[in-house]
Image (tube, rainbow, N blue to C red; front, side, top):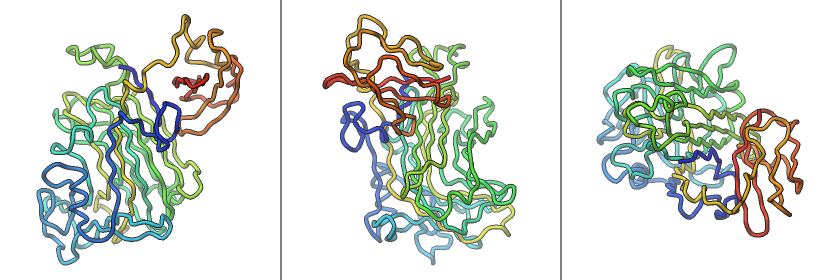
Length: 387
């Protein structure tokens, strides 16, 4: 199984997909607000086939409770003039809300996929999944020194699922705080080591609509695969991968871009990994917090059809590339005639276009790129590693 670390939803038309950038073979889940009323029912109709996909104060259910029920549902739908559409509003109240009537040192208002959700909404070993959504933090948003998660990727099952694999978390620190992307690699004993892998000052992300894309290939890291523990990785030799991008909706300006092509997404013996969106925060240092609201819109989960991605468009007698990874030059086989070559960064921005089989990339930063090769009506996309 190949790992195509490919932002399919950003690079439109490169792999014979529709104008939305989604291939016909991809399994796509979309959750959009449709107006006030029946919000919990709408969420459940999309994210689960039974049970309750919300963990929210103010309503009863498998994952809810009736604390602060006088406020009503803590997830609602409101009209947003900037996006010109209805969006989801997630509320938490400092003095009245808790975590599902179980934990009173923290508060939770989230939606998720879980066991009763469709198989295409849960990521298992060897799958390539794209999560995409929009969100807006208030200009006066308050975080604390402990944790405030607004997105999580969580493993389920296996005994090593206490901590999420990945979180997007506003956190205080320094003069103003940061929005941190936190990766928690497994330690194998039910715990996880926390690593802040990317982030920027929180003020850069406040008061504006942002679009996030999280692309993951679910597998262990190269060390685990080389050990081939109990034959677990026999069919999936490519290491797990992660690409996380946040950009401003209005301007397209990129505020975060993190890639890791050798990362452990597949916790030992886990059943699946799944997303959670909302507000989940500690009440330590609660004097720094306030009643908080976060807006979300346009959730999507795409299970990308890797068979469609890997179908060859060219029958070659020689390898297409002279070598890969590359340093200063991409060398294309002389077998390719009269072709157009376009290079994109992992966020989907075109960085060059040429008809030459010798491509100078000395000016580019190290990282992952996507080379589109087009000749006539045929094309192929190749992942390029620039050193």
